[in-house]
Length: 179
Image (cartoon, rainbow, N blue to C red; front, side):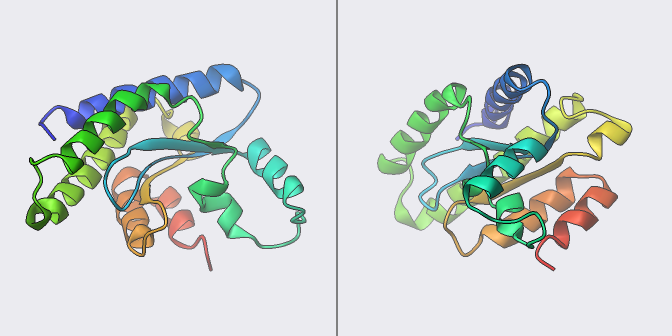
């Protein structure tokens, strides 16, 4: 896109995260992620809280004693997947126009897709540096990462982004999420 795209993603993500905190002040958010699709036409936020996870597990009839890490870590299963996401609409429109237009020939798509992923990681890094997700012990309660919906490259991107974005203890918990 352009050099300021990461900042634009960060601004949209900040609006989303603050709106979620305001709408659900009694919930304990443990994860916030940005995801895209394999066609690089979207950037979408997703968040989950301990309370949201419990509601999803109850709705899906998954007992508290059952290991079901997909409910904890798969953004498509989260209580706040694409919630409060209106601020992302202009970004998604621009991405779709760019991908479908003549600017990105097929031979350059891979580079464009990698750049988008880097911008998404950078957006979360900027917000983390600004303290949006807390500091110290409060920051260690939330995991940040970037993913791709329904894509074989999702787990590698999740792991790479989580390593970059989180304190070591948070990353260690995340990397063992499916163990």
